[in-house]
Length: 464
Image 1: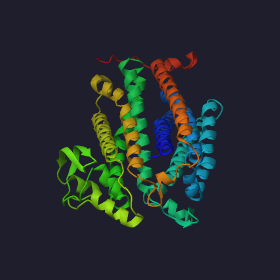
Image 2 (image 1 turned 90 degrees about the vertical axis):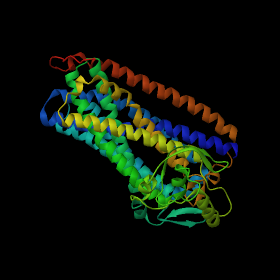
Image 3 (image 1 turned 45 degrees about the vertical axis):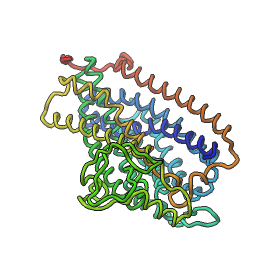
Image 4 (image 1 turned 135 degrees about the vertical axis):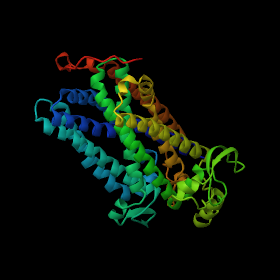
């Protein structure tokens, strides 16, 4: 692999993973804060305003870093991936323009209203401003995923002069990949915010820091975590079913399935893939599970890498059309494991709430929630890696290979220097974000102005 291609891929991967640490949390927190402030408006209880302001501060820290880290992504298209930009520019222009001109300005405008509008506009209008921020994040995610879905499953285009030109805008909006990818991503973002709020609230309760107040946000966070973790699993299954027909090589690579499976197909729980010899070691399989995952039924054979490679070579010409199997296989399993742990923890808390059990006197569960803040981040990062790496060698499936998309005049030295610089810069920003987040979490409500300190009742003792 040419050095400039290798380093350009690493740079885009590193910067995008950093960016994706902040985006899901801000998408989810915007909705959760809107719910908190709506409860304040409807019930008139200052506790919900206090919680909205507290989590709003954490939202703003992550929103700022999400914006800063996202700016570089589009610059990379033109600098490191100029041939890619030429090829998809006509298709990507409309979705990305709408995202920038409508969604981003909408988010920024109403976020400004929310930040500076306390005591200056009515409570209802102030709450509505955060709802509009939440809607703006959804619109932004929709248009970005519209572009990404085209890379996964191209639709609505015609090839002219060596470029993909959009001929049907509504085909982009109706892309089947979009309608499994978009809800899966957004539900994951809401689950991320649910675990973040639940974990931060659990931490405050364990510290005996206004536990009666943070019990309210704990319940809301657990409710989000349970509901949206379940929806993530449902949409993840729908996306897997779609992959079998739309991107069968990605599905085969995620299962390290070298030859066509029998029917019914077992799911490989664990294995050590050996790409050189096209075999697996130490396999642990679950009968029927792959057929269920791929087709939603207990029968059906799944095509393997060997047969799919032959089909791809016959269709597109000689070449290696197999993605990195080991990475695809393990990122998929790490994502699934993190998602299942999220589902178990969320549903357990939801059952306790349904039975009207007091979560504040369950220190073991509270400690688990604090550590569980990391689970959605693991699931989000590995899910993205599996989605993008599993598509290789294509940057646009069936149309443009990654090797043909890189800028031909950019040298490995150029990309290498910028890779080191951006990795260092992004690491510093991530460290700053983590430090600020931890600072405000540890300060708790003491980070507010003294006159804003909430009036809370007698703090119950939490058995630790």
